[in-house]
Length: 98
Length: 272
Image 1 (tube, chains in turn blue, green):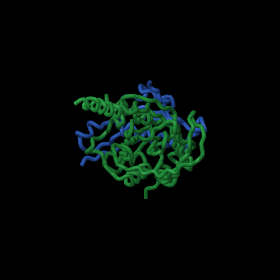
Image 2 (cartoon, one colour):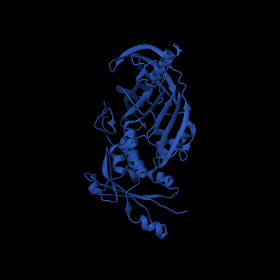
Image 3 (tube, helix red, strand yellow):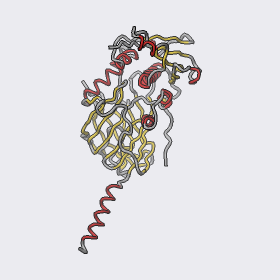
Image 4 (tube, rainbow over the protein chains, first blue to last red):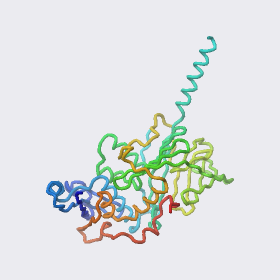
């Protein structure tokens, strides 16, 4: 059974959320209290065929990214003040189709 | 023979009338205090597609992501753009529902027969321009207060709520942790009243009971990011590192929040 250890490196920095600034090996991520980039590092397993493919930082998979976004949003909701006491809107207003 | 022709056309008309039952797109603004320590609730738009006995309800942005997934692979940018705190979808067939949800890289489903014991009240007020009456129900370990509009004869509402003699315009739990308020209702044609996209095939989905799923979801929410990654990859021992350009702390720098079990405030809290 292959061993896959994952390390997530999060590169923070306000204003770095643009996709181009995150590079090819990271994805922009943001919430109400944080803007930055997220990438996944999969350390060496000892299996060349696996390690060759996993070398260096990588963009998280869609499922990994969804979990990262969920935890980031929860963190911000817990710790950060929001602009409105009524709560913060997640996403945009829906476009109503005729 | 003369009698057969009118009967034939009458039958055709009845079949057509049944097949063309009115369909509605109902949008709610949901307010969710997922944890009691949140400074303010998260607000998200949710949509209900309703057509007679059948309906599907999910977060608006999750519907957008599902529609994208039908034509191409979802990107991280899509997920970041169409933020959605919960990925569930609820399909209705009368009072029988199928609940789908995604946690990590798994898709779950369970079936449930709704048997809401509504207690109709005598109060009335106008909400969103509709004359509404009140009703109460207990579900999922919470007491809910609903306001429904009899002038909208749609047996539907947000989340798993239905069974009132009119569309639910607003429903709030007694602790004010969860609230759904009507944003718009429009008659539509050709609505798809099933979840349009599944990340896993029927065989691959994990089929649980409602209680078992709610327990799993509760404990999943307690996990740190590293622990979730370990579950998703089938291996324990995941580690985390963080670098910050400004030297500040990161959300992912935090160890597991040991107090989260007492502050987690999911919509259904009646599991063991």
